[in-house]
Image 1 (tube, helix red, strand yellow):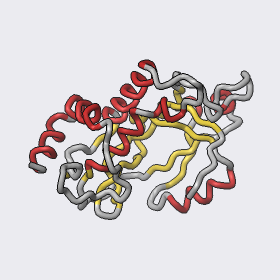
Image 2 (cartoon, one colour):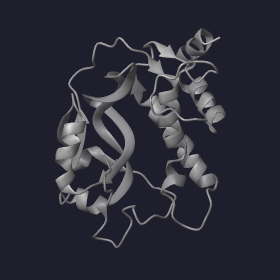
Image 3 (tube, one colour):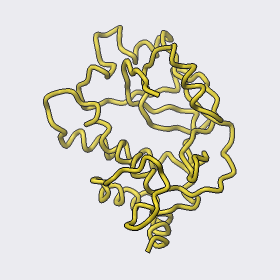
Length: 216
């Protein structure tokens, strides 16, 4: 499904906990659970209202619910983009949300699923590669990726790991040479693998080491 993105902003949303809690074919994926004291960082995208029905159909097992404006904290983004909501004051996505002119929805479930499938390293690689390059991917200026963008990406990826639970689930390091890749959209190569591995060693060292040792 191709989604038309009108604008977007990185933000911290409260009242949600992200965890390895969703079954996805042969593996476990991250999902969102309602949690009064939880918070997650991500990107809020503005889409045409007519596409909400398609999202509802795609997000099987989840319920779309409204987020209060006070539970959304917007983050500064170090890039220029026509898609980013940084236009004339009074017309930005941030102001519209704060004024109640635009609704913010999230897809959550009440509880985690009973999981039988493992976490796949190839799925983690896709997620963290996107996090690390989040600023560069949105950048439309003539400036190439600079240290400020890379710092934002590292911080974004680190916060993804910190605000995600359930790392004690079975974890398969299927990036290893000769391993069968569990994720159907796995990257052919992982240029940022060293940076990804350093983050995993820093944030979830015990679980990561167990996954690596099982692949040897």
